[in-house]
Length: 379
Image 1 (tube, rainbow, N blue to C red):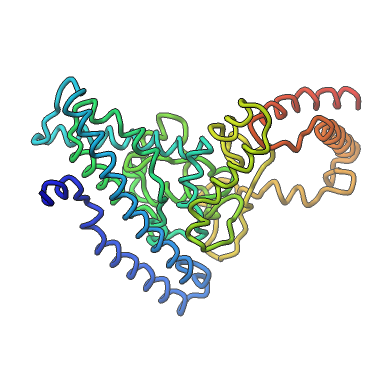
Image 2: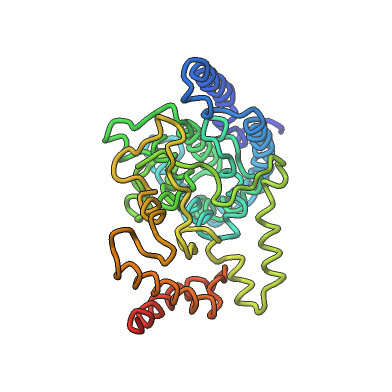
């Protein structure tokens, strides 16, 4: 009886755990060697407390995932046996390839949902909370994988055996572990075009404005190219959240965003506004940033340089040259005029509640275009 229950619970992740441990140890050893021989690597690689936090979150996630599978197994088996109009055989090679592609597409949809919808981000943000990017960071997983159940639900209805779904999803996560490293640069162009590589996933973990909400793919990066969410690596990312949590408390890292949602809902007025704080876009995402939330690229390490194209802080150097009236050096009267327009826009923005953050913020940005035109005509 125990074997019958355990058999569908087996997961490639369990067999990959020793490989994960060896990879983390080797990567940490390489960084330690570099730190002793090259000063440029001293602030890179691993932090003891950060890695311990990631490992603790990984152990907790493995326990939660086991419970999650026990619960969803009952539902998936019922749907597969009683509702699915046909059963796809699990003893053919093509069925496994087909399932791998469909699971990867489902992962892309779930991953994009987790970044674009605030209640999904509340669960997923724990994985992005580290300011380091290494194999240890890959184990910093969430403890509430409720969204996976919703996106995997169609798979047994399509006729895929629940056990096969678990195995393929586990293999997908094993592949993603190896994309969490800075030790590997860009690979052969055809591989970079088709697959999610360390270069692509570094972009995904970047908090720089140009990198926000990009590269959601698990195994294939083709989904991002198809659906407009692809971004190549242009410079070394700044890792972590746009608003750092500054904590290593695993419970806080896992659930603090839910507390913020509850606080905003309690303060909001009206059902529509409250729902907006739950299922609307998260604050700080590409869709809700009302100002450029750059984590400016700074060459803090000698090897930090763009992979191609201008550095993302090119505009900051120009901003530093502005005079007290907003003029740019060398632009004379036109620079003063543009400064007056900006101050006019700022005044009107404040009067209309322009500091608002939440579901209605994007409407104010649209109004800002019209406000600027009015200010320009008045000047």
